[in-house]
Length: 353
Ligand code: NAD
View 1: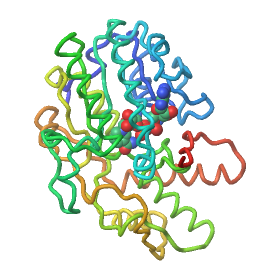
View 2: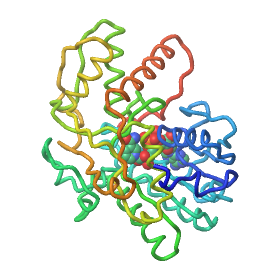
View 3: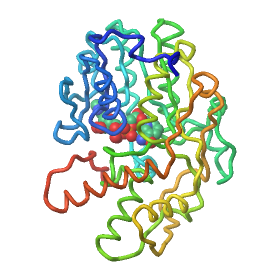
View 4: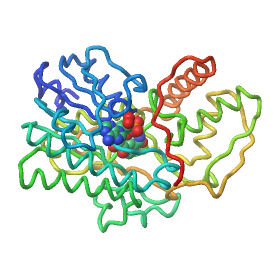
């Protein structure tokens, strides 16, 4: 454990850490993580207005900037020792299947951020890639084998969102090859936890299902609509594992410009996920299946052989434990909003044009 590479061992306490997308879910948690480790200079950036950020961490320089704009990226990266780029126009399957143009346009963010990080003389650059970069042909069966890093090529990524990730990964690899910027690339597999999107059209399955169960409980309408037939399989990584994994990957010199899975290998079907949440809520609902709703690939899991080899670790928070914490937070948000209290929110998914 102690020999793992970390920010705490690599950086001075007053080196500047820049985190983009920090008004959102994962970068918000990462900001809190580094703050709690005692780093004194953190710059957090998001295009969302500050009152809509899920977490505002005291003592952190928090800026509202659109990072698809070059000048803003220069401003964001000024003086940075390390840059973590987690800003992206994204959401769950309902969003990325409908808004491919928005997803593709996130390439502007990475293109400008990596150049700005390089010009600013940053020592390390992190890019949040996704399991959606993997070849979809390998994910057509709910019992499909887990995806290992080499499965991204030959490429047939998720249209829009997945191709943007793959292309941005290539930027990271070439910035290392040609310009010697140390880049690090993690392919996240479904992340969930408190302080993330739970309604509005961008939410992902665990948060959406928690919200539906909470609503059913509250309204007494003991019914739930599930997208697809519920047999699709996925793995879900708890947010604390994600923040820790980002730190360890970013400071592991053996991983420069090398994509690595960061995900849980605890595979469940969507039906099993619903049962777990029902168990937490202490209710059972009648299930209705919407076969026309977006549902993504049939099966996807993370092969963690590589991360085990390099870091002697893999994300390991048990799903039930992480879901209980997520459910409690969403229930709190739900009832706060119902009572008219202000609650942070994601930018709403655009209506279809
Ligand atoms: P999120 O939507 O909660 O956070 C992303 C943030 O980026 C949002 O707050 C958004 O306002 C901000 N943003 C978008 N465009 C911007 C711009 N032009 N300038 C500045 N900020 C901008 O999403 P998240 O779940 O926290 O995801 C973070 C990263 O991880 C993204 O790159 C995402 O693609 C990747 N990822 C997430 C998951 C997951 O399960 N959540 C899985 C795979 C990959």
